Amino acid sequence: MNAEYLKIIQALKTRQFAPVYVIDGEEAYYIDRLTEIFENNIVTPAERDFNLITLYGKDVQWADVINACRRFPMFAEKQVVILKDAAQLSGLPELINYFEKPMPTTVLLIEHRFKKIDGKTKFGKAAKEKTVYYTSEKIKDEKMPGWIRDYGKSIGFQVGEKVSEVLTSYLGNDLQKIVNEIEKVRINIPNEKELTEDHIKKYIGVSRDYNIFDLPVVLTGGDREKFYKMLSYFLSTPKASPMVLMVTSFYGHFSKLYMANFLIGKPEKDISAALGAWKSREYMAATGQWPLPRVERALLILAKYSTMAVGIESSADDRELLKEMMGQLLM
Image 1: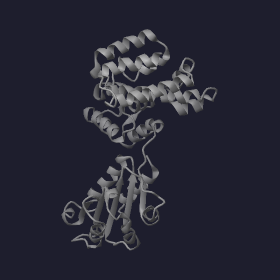
Image 2: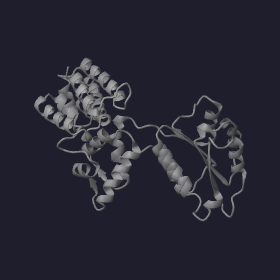
Image 3: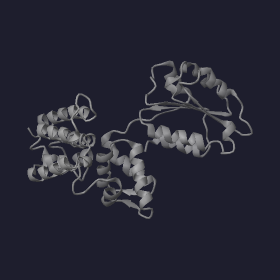
Image 4: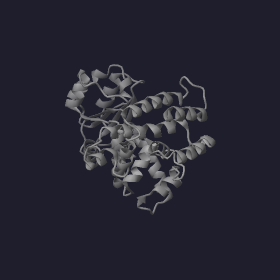
């Protein structure tokens, strides 16, 4: 996990509080985790009624935030003020004056979710210089398997390389969704120490026999007979293969195949690092039948069907869209 994030967590656990924290970024998971700590771990449950103040940017003025921060805590050492959805606060730059002379008995958290603060503005510069500032970045797809393994390690639940790749293919880079699914498994098997493919199949729903994340692998692997058997199954059971998830599956696979074309001739360790050790040979073998121009064409087709899958410029059902998309990919 992010070292800067862990540093903030450790300081909060040891009650080393800064006067002002500013958190922004597109990844809601880390913002939510930090906000929960400010809500639950700084003032005691008995103190919260008087010393935990939550404000929302769309509902208050900048002066309301400063006034809340300037008041003294009641029967407690500290008070916590949380400004949520700060991007919607009119006059946000006015808070710079408070950064210069914050109340020593107030811990202020400014939550600016879904958007990074412009570092060239006065407010952005002041946030970086005068506060504890943290940006919650989206995890890149190629980093997700490693993130999943690290998360498993942090909760004492081992996740192997292949399993982390399967979860990434199935769940994408939605951190909260991944955490929720792993926790769902742990609730069902509290005494197990390792997440296995069988657990994923049983509790998360990825089938080993007819897995939509195997379909693009079979397609590019050249086994047409097996591909058509699998495709017939998915066409006959559309609920097992929602089009949005199918496009996600193919896009993830072809993105790796795109990368593989640039790795031809590279050392095996570099290929394994980029593509994942357990699938790197599979991807490299597929480049023979799927050179760069063909992969680029496939990605354009997938981009088109990703919008159609959510009803943009198309009223066709998932079954018809899947047939069309497969036909174009096979041309």
